[in-house]
Image (cartoon, rainbow, N blue to C red; front, side):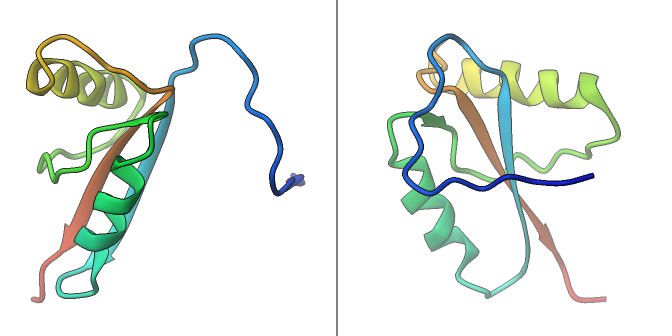
Length: 88
């Protein structure tokens, strides 16, 4: 599997169901990162929803949760969630 990364590339038009999951350890400044990402117009959500992700339906549940939180509007092409790992 290969990846092609283009910096400054334009996003394709149309509604996308992209997801951004920030996986972090507590006290790693990940909340700051998520607030910065969430301030972008194409990204909706920037809080920790405390969900588990096992498949596609869990991601759709995240989108519904963000819709509920934002009063039915998911403004961006991407939905953001932060997953923090607590110390054992």
